[in-house]
Amino acid sequence: MNNIVKSFAFGAALALPVVAQASTDGLIADFESDKGYTALGVYDCWEQSPFRTDKLSGNVAVVDNPFADELNPATDEPINGSERVLAAQRSRFAGNRFGVRIDLEETFELTPTARYVHVFIHTPKKGRAMLVGLGSRQERLDQDPYCEQFWVLSSAAEQAGQWYDAVFPIKGAGGIDIRSFVIVPDCESPHDLTEDFLFYVDAIEINDDLQPRITDDFYYQINGDKSTHMLNRNDRYTRTVSLNGSADASTQTFAVPQENDKHVYFDLTENIFTARPGESLTPVISYNGTWMHGYFYIDYNSDGRFDSVVAENGGAAADSECVAWSCYLSKDSKGTSLSSTNTLTIPSFTLPADLAPGMYRCRFKVDWNNIDAKGAPGDADTNNSVAANGGVIADLMLHVHGTEVTVNDNQLNGEVLAAEGDQKLNALPVPFKQDFMIRMNPEKGFEQDGFTMLCGYNFSGDPVDKMGNRQYFVYEVKASEISENGLYTIPAERMGHGNVMINGNMKEVDAIVNPNVEPAAPAAEGDVIYDLQGRRVKSADRAGFYIVNGQKALVR
Image 1 (spheres, rainbow, N blue to C red):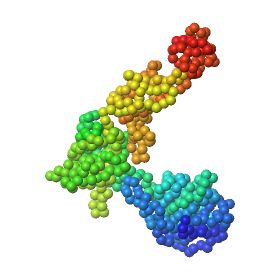
Image 2 (tube, one colour):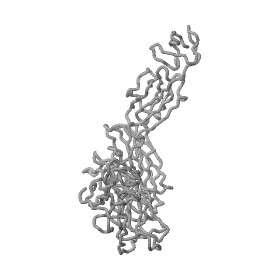
Image 3 (tube, one colour):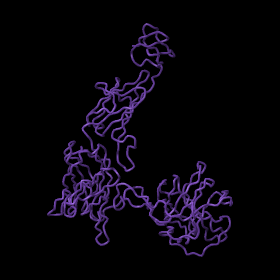
């Protein structure tokens, strides 16, 4: 690393700088300048550390931010666009509480009232971040001014490979002056470290807010916090949202509990509309109130946001994910000029005919003359925000499907077949949302033990993806639910979730005792039994001929 400075010695007493007591509210250091700190180094809480016995010296420096262009995928804005950050080398020869030490320009008192220290951290290794406070008790004049006064783990989830805001709750008995912070990037045993690594620190701040400044909620954002309530608007609320015109049902409606809940944002993604490519659909919002506008969005490319594009005629462009609205700049989404802008009536729109089957996030919004899916943020003069105006933002799912789905099976020691015609389930096309009967067909020496069924799309990933979108449902079917002849009917409802993957469970059958055989004598427990292909089996699980004690026998 270039421009690295040596760490200072920690064994000797250090002269105390004459500093003012910090207000402990706001930014302490951002490393854009040398303000906020008096010295930088490394520190290890392990007393026998080679960094405390002067066998090793640490590497630390203020450097150009190597991740200034790292973007929030939801906003395309830098997560941390600072020009300069603090870099340090995490040594594999240090203890688990080894980190970068920052001597503060202003001390502050540790009091019984909890405060929160926020630190931007970027590390290639996932681990529990820790903050160590160095200082002294005010009444102990002979105490080392840089004694360890607290150790606290981050309350924010640690992440690797991207900037995150580690949040540390701190408090004490009072009368404790904190002069230095030690930021430990991974409070884990270093025994599994095969090499040192660089980590970065930035934007150290103390405030009363437990919430991280960098959210990992990158997807489907709103302007403001998703826990925001409406501002003094008991007269306005959304009751239901609907999609009309689908071939599956003329009207599909779901409730929005805003009348009692009073939130602006609702994650209602457990509710799923269904439609087919090329269908004409009409969004409908049941709203208590007037002089507001309705908007409907579909995340066609599943990137975690809704892109709004207005065509030259003032309507929705072909590539817009705001697919329909009642009014924006005095026009609806068809581009029709409105004689009155007091309307929540949203025109119909048509799903693309080539839209791939799958699960898509959709959003209803009640707002005033604002096409941004995140909602009107308001302004200082009018506070004309979605919250102040009594609007709503509600996310649901849209299942786009064809007239058929495909069924596959995956198991050892047998197979699962279509009951009708014994067809193999190899991308077998079957009608959408209709009962489908299967037959478990275990190999000789095995029996069915139920199966696991995935219904939906993208089975290689998680049932709910990282953006919070449902991809498939998982159902367990017990052996007792399957008939004696191996038949089971998958209900139409489950066949309406999308494609189906059946993972059959086949288990070995226990050894046969006293089977009825001819012409050989009855087999005893422990007898060796083979099928006619010479394969050893634990039991004659089906009627037929077997070899028992070297003789051909008929097992009924």
